[in-house]
Every structure is written in C-alpha cells, then in structure tokens.
Length: 174
Image 1 (cartoon, rainbow, N blue to C red):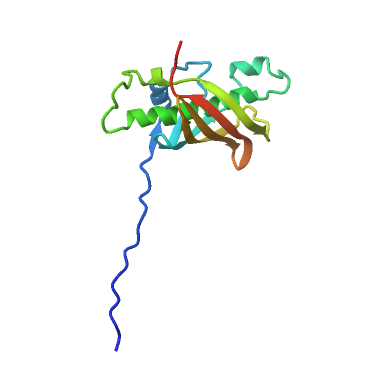
Image 2: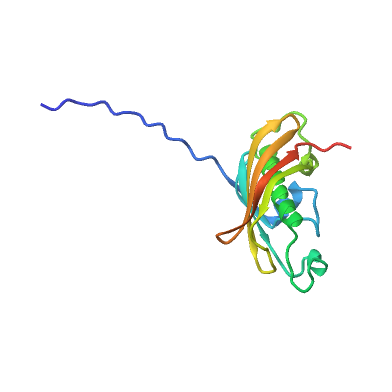
C-alpha cells in the first residue's frame, strides 16, 4: 500500500526586475555631456545593485587625436570613467524606479551623481581601439557612509579589457 506524501514547498527566488536605459535616458540621469559622456546604453540594471552598459568606441573620439595618434588606443582612464558612469546609472536608477521617491530626493536625478573617490586593483588586459564595443559591468557593494564600494569590469566580446574596484561618493558637495 502506497503512502501519500505531502508536497513540499520549494522556495522560488524571484528574479529582480531589470531596466534598460537609452542614451537619451542616460543624459537625464547623469550630469555628463559630450565629450565626457562615455556610455551609450545601459541594460540589465537592477536599481541600486548592478547593471551592464555599452560604450561603442569610435575613431571620432576626441582623445584619439592625441593618445598615440599613429596607433589609436582608448586611454585606461577613459575606460574607468565609462565604468564609473555606469555605476552612477545603477544608483540613480534606484531613485528613479522607487515606487515613491524618498524624502530629500532631488527633482533632477543627475544632481545626486557624486564623484569617483578611489580606483583599486585595476588591471588592464586588452587594448581598446576604434571599432570595439566595450561591454561594461558594475556590481555595487557595501555603503560606507557617503561612499560606496563597487566591482567593475569592461570586456570586448569575450575578452576582458579591464577589471577592478572603485569607491564612489553618493552625493555631491562643494
């Protein structure tokens, strides 16, 4: 005789809601403008947690005129800047996508974008040249008062171009 077994409940972890942002959306989220706006698109953004972005590298970028003019290479600091801007999109998205804005949230979300405070353990493993498409990744870590630690990566196709850690400020002063 078979005994009946009560079905067990399996906890299913819901996948967090993700968002995508066009270049026009990003211009509303960040204070940066050409030639310093370094990301073209953001996607798979989990507000306040993580996100991915795209930077299409064009020979028309102003830095190529002076950075190895006979062998165009995207400066590492510009790759880091692109990753830092993706970080800003991820934390501004947290304000924009919240069901109800928190008290003290600025009307202009770009006003909440802080500064790059520290670059740690950044390793560059591939040259980035005109025609490449950088895929950027950011994972926000622990909050340390007005600072936030972040893990970042940039790849071209399946090849890692740069990876490391950043500390960003979560507010602007001065």
